[in-house]
Length: 115
Length: 110
Image 1 (cartoon, rainbow over the protein chains, first blue to last red):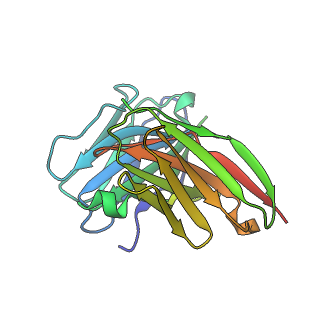
Image 2: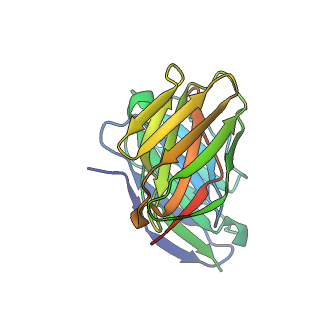
């Protein structure tokens, strides 16, 4: 597609439920990133995928968070047993192999509210 | 790891005035410094970037300067307009991961 697409755009869930967030990167982009943005705060790195290499999971805050990506396509971020502190905007970004030239392209994010 | 600090956290300017946002970084190996603009309800959008082999880059009303020795870089917006109102993020990168500043909320007062 023309841009990075994320779905849903908004998600309200009850504490303790699992949620799944989806990211469709730009076609041909080999790198995909997930970030979390809490209200009024900066971007917190969660996980990074590059092609078929093992993902960099160093930013995942707990074992309740996991993400998958098959090849260079769609990625899903799963949060199990959601807590109120998980409420945030979850942003996905993708970049081509020439990352330094083109930088990231971000999606519009999924606003997650845990009630 | 890298640590990026960004100041100020909020900035209000009169329309037509200039705005300057400053960032510092800790890892001298960082070599790529993008700036992103995030409007309400949208994802961050790349507006300008600079690599470590360049000291200054300009694109119309926006410019970025980099001082490698002091490990700081700045975003300059001249002749500000109301549509410049947004949150601006700086970032530093030396590899696959970007380290973001905490953002500056810019308000341009008509």
